[in-house]
Amino acid sequence: MLKQEIKAELVKRGITFKQIAAEQKVKPPTVSIVLKGDRRSRRIEQAIAAKIGKTAEEVFPDRYLGREDCEMP
Image (cartoon, rainbow, N blue to C red; front, side, top):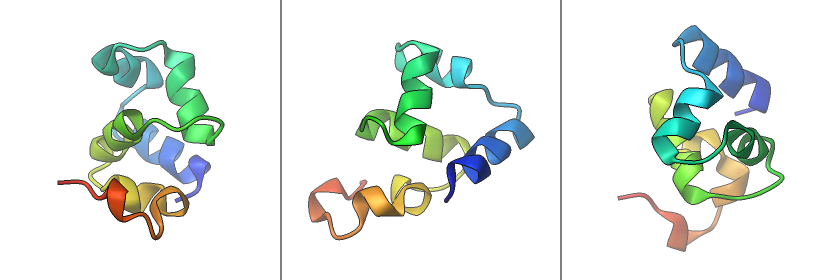
């Protein structure tokens, strides 16, 4: 998914980066940085994906493509 699509889906569901950050015990800019792809955090990628009802592999396929070690349970 494109980052704009992810943001739009979060907005549609009434979910903010601030909420995700609070749940993950990080600062809101960290969520933004992970979404943009400037940094990787499997935990935050999974949290973002869960909020829109998808897996991290579906939301961030370029980050997980061909990586067996990144499969989610």
